[in-house]
Length: 227
Image 1: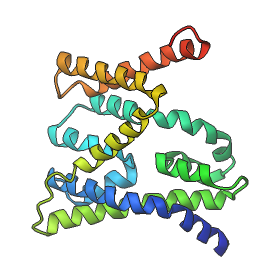
Image 2 (image 1 turned 90 degrees about the horizontal axis):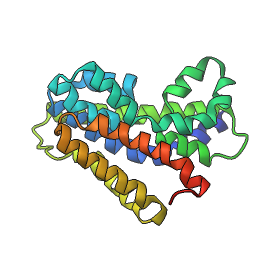
Image 3 (image 1 turned 30 degrees about the horizontal axis):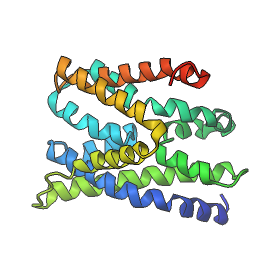
Image 4 (image 1 turned 45 degrees about the vertical axis):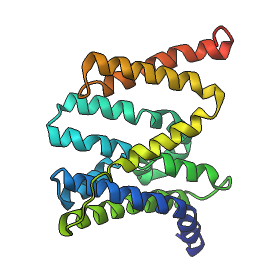
């Protein structure tokens, strides 16, 4: 890869660096507090690389949750990747041996960076951005895990960082009137599932029902038959 391409990739990935190092550190510390050391932290970020999913996995790993529940939760939490990944199917299919990695590494933030690139940007730049972003996440994870394991620091509450991020995103989306019905629907379904199934088993069913209802009602809304 040419030096100019490496520089463009690094510059484009810097905003992700700022977020991933902090959130990765929070995840590593959260995992360490649950009793899983740096090796587990590295494996999760290198082979799962799921951001919010990794935070959700911590209590599941600590509590011995069944693989079926973990798989369903992973599908529901990460299902959004199926939708925005469609726009890069043709591009990734032309990238030869790195295609599997490009599919694996397409996170929300990496996708946002890709969308901001000038049209016709080289495949090498896209690959480097995806690789740099994962390295930032893995690096942050290891920092958090090592600090929480080696130093007598009270890191209670650091696991709330991902929750706080989602709250900010939710509030931002709620400021747009067109998003409020979907947000209200999701909240009602989640509350119903919580009361019906309890705090340990409501998440995956709530996500599945919410996704199904929104998928079924969207065509009606777009066609003008419902509001």
